Length: 108
Image (tube, rainbow, N blue to C red; front, side, top):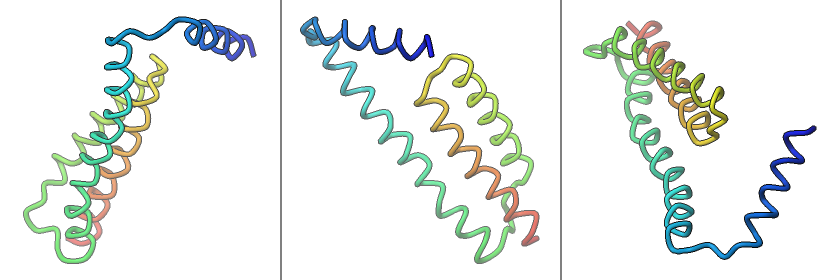
């Protein structure tokens, strides 16, 4: 695959140059964004547990459907721009949002 070869060439060229401080800060930020994305999703877990184990009273299915649609658009954006962080994050958000929607619809 041509793109893979170009990517490898790019990676090899990057290794030849010493990263400056800004590159190091970007690298740290790139790692940190995965943690932040995961924590945001993890904070929604109590809502999922509540909807599936207790009751869905007061949970707006329309809001969670809207969140799902927004997450799907962001995921498509990530796919088009080949932004792995966005793809992974919004794939997980879509799953979270749809699990809340399903829980609300089943347990009402």
